[in-house]
Image 1: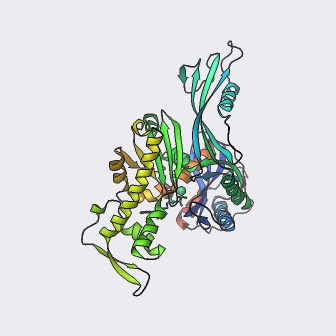
Image 2: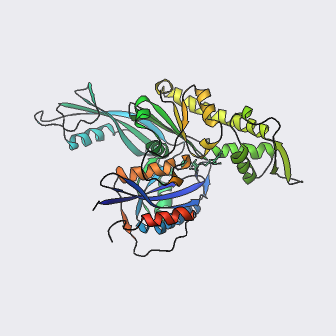
Image 3: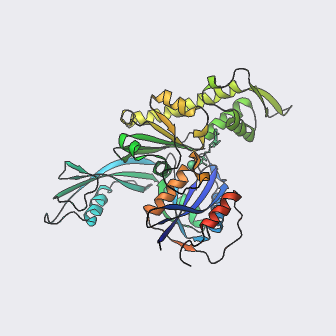
Length: 416
Ligand SMILES: Nc1ncnc2c1ncn2[C@@H]1O[C@H](COP(=O)(O)OP(=O)(O)OP(=O)(O)O)[C@@H](O)[C@H]1O
Ligand SMILES: [Mg+2]
C-alpha cells in the first residue's frame, strides 16, 4: 500500500481565511483531502486589527477543514505577509575536515546554518531561510554538494526577517484557535511554489500576488529565490478609491469593480453606463464605466510603479527574462496583466496554481495560489502533525459540491 503523509496549511488573507488539508503518497502525488474557508474579519490596514475576530475565523475555517477531510488538525504551516518583511542573501563558509570523504548532509546543514547567522535587532525575527546556491572550493557552483568531494564549502541563503510583534500576534491568533504553528512561509514564496514553471525560475521571473491588502513579490533567478517583499497596496485600495470618488458604499464599489472594472480605461466602452447603489438621496446613481476604469487605471499604475521601484532598487528588473506572473484575486481585474506588461516592458501572464496534480479545479484559480503553495510546502518540505479524527461529522462546507467530493477523497486517509 502507498504510504500517505498528511499536512495542513493556513492562508490568512484580508478577505478570506483558508485552511487546506492534503496528503502526498510515496510517489509524490498531492491530494487535497479537505478544506475550510470563511470570510476574514478582524484585519485592518494589512495587519491584525482584532485578535478575537481573526482567531474565531481561523477556528471556524479549521473546523470546516477537519469536517471535510475527516482529520484532526493539530498543527499547520501559516502564510505571512506585510510591509514589515525584509529579505537578504547571506553567504557562509565551512571547511571539510577529511577530504577523503564526500560532503555529507550534516556538512550541508552546517554551512546553511553558518550562512543563516545574521545580526538582527531584538524587535525582529527570522521567519524563513531558503538555500540559494552552493560552491565547492569557492568557485565551482553546484546545485547540491552532498556526495561530492571538496575541502571548502560555501552556501548562500535567502533569509526573510519580520517584525517580532507581528509574527507573535499571528502566532497568538493561530495557536489561540487550537492549531500549533509548524512554521511561517512568506505568502509570495508560497504562491511562487504553486504557480511558476521550472523554466521561469531558471530564466528569472517575478511572482506578484496582488490580493486585497498586500501585493507580495517573490523573485527567482537561476532557479532560486533572490528577493522577496510585500507592499501595502492592493485590491482594497482600488475599491476604496471607487467609494471615495463615486461616493458609494463598499459593497457597491466592490461589485462594480469585479463586474465592470477594467485596468485600462480605453477598454471600457465610451457610452456604457451602469446604475450603482450610492450614498444620499436618491440611493442610486448612474455612472459611466469609462469613468470607473479611469479611477481603477490610476491606482493600478501606482501599484505597478511601486513594483517597478522595488525591482529597480534590487537590480532585478533586467534579470527576469520570463517577466511577471500575477496571482491573487486582483490579478483577475481585466486588463491588469496587459497594463503590467506594458508599464514594466516585460512579458506577463496570470498564474494558476496548477503546478501540482490533483488540485481540485476550485483551487486552480489565482486567489488560491498562496493556499496551494503553502500546502505543497507543508507536505513536501516541512514536518507536520495531523491526526485522524475519531468522529465523522456531517459536512457544512460553504462550497457543497467540492466539500462532498473532498470528503469522498478523504476515505481511507491515514491509518484508522
Ligand atoms: N474579477 C475581479 N476583478 C477585480 N478584483 C477582483 C476580482 N476578483 C477578486 N478581486 C479582488 O481580489 C481581492 C481578493 O484577493 P485575494 O483573495 O487574493 O486576497 P486575500 O488573500 O484575501 O488578501 P491578502 O493576500 O491581500 O491578505 C479583493 O480586493 C477583491 O476585490
Ligand atoms: Mg492572499
